[in-house]
Amino acid sequence: GQQLNQSPQSMFIQEGEDVSMNCTSSSIFNTWLWYKQDPGEGPVLLIALYKAGELTSNGRLTAQFGITRKDSFLNISASIPSDVGIYFCAGHSNFGNEKLTFGTGTRLTIIP
Amino acid sequence: GAVVSQHPSRVICKSGTSVKIECRSLDFQATTMFWYRQFPKQSLMLMATSNEGSKATYEQGVEKDKFLINHASLTLSTLTVTSAHPEDSSFYICSAESGTSGGTDTQYFGPGTRLTVL
Image (cartoon, rainbow over all chains, first blue to last red; front, side):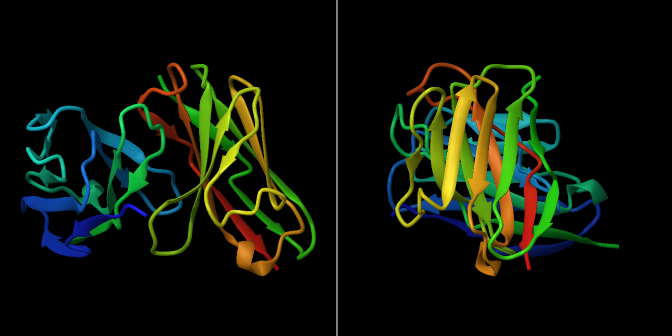
């Protein structure tokens, strides 16, 4: 089946640093979504991308839908302690297909 | 807006018993709801897609007789794990999608239910 590969798998950064993570696929996706999951909670939507090349911001978060439609990245600027968690990319592979495919996740840890 | 709740948040049961998990969309009507399972340190894996008033569509490898899904109204879907065994212990998460079936509306996730089978 389809798979979304995220990198890096984990990150250890200091507060205030910028963060960058990406998601790649071997096949085309028509939408890309970025979620954050805290321990013991469900994922919370951060940013949704619907068009190839689209660049969208949500506060300190910026995400882009790759031109090839096979990748997306998420940047977090000036990280703060509450950014700690697991970030998942997800996407719809076919228009009209409701099913989401999730990435493997990036675990973000902030070193005090 | 777009709040999804799950109940219970955690449940511990004995092997062989059945457990029902509820998923509700609180401020919107969801024609489609989804059930996921997440094992520790892993990603979310879709188990089934639930459409209001019709039978659920299960992903390959998911036993429909073991994981019973009912989507009786536009705001409620239930997942019943029948004859639960320790290997069914996992974090079960539902999501709800607003809009018409067949679209690619955003999925909003519930807070999850931690199931532990002894």
